Length: 297
View 1 (cartoon, rainbow, N blue to C red):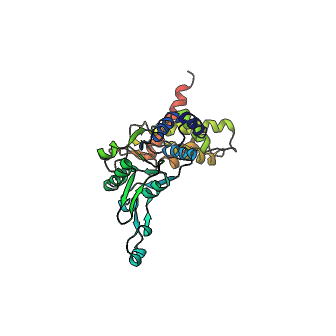
View 2: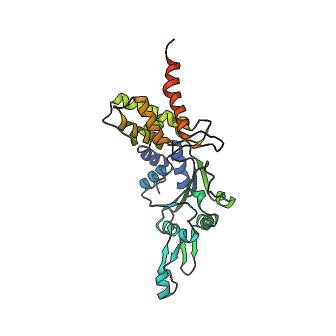
View 3: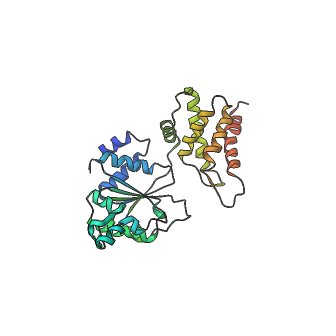
């Protein structure tokens, strides 16, 4: 693992938009041999950041989706039932799960939705993180290669179907809060992910700016519990690009907002309005009230 954090960061940053601080701190943690929890809402480049680091260092990435079905046996592995019937239990008929696979390959074990995994499954990680080895019944001990790390990611705003992490888990992991980027960085992400070369350049820049602005507004609206990530702005741009230039520009943006954002925003439980009504209000603030307030006289 390259110890030149500054040089590694510069090479990785050339392929990312923003995230210089988060990149530097994550690199420092994993280079120091630490496991880390990346905590932030969806669409804040947590997976992108980790994939860029492992690609730069040539380290395998083992991806696991945290959910109620992720049992300790699925995480560790299991003995092949057919072979057990023929041969009895042995190390040869053990099928490695993602944890053992990551330890043997010296990979980064990346568990998305970390706090959705059951508590007993997360506790299975404790020995692996503390001792860098695990004991497999009837198969022996597995010792991790030096580059093995456990990386978790979780959405701090999501409390449905989640597990409260124990102090033992927190005690074995570093933590980094990953928040939304600023407007200019998000515009850069949209330009990277949603190019529209057939659209007039000036119109495209206007569309990107508007898409990012209304998407960011969903995060600040008083009726919205959780707003959309930059993925909403990407989809909004792509959809509006299909509607233009035939449709009226403001209406094309609104129609694209409904399709791209209505399923990505989560209203407060006490609110009786629809997502479409909230989006219409955000659209009016941008395209009706805003221009009117800026008009001379």
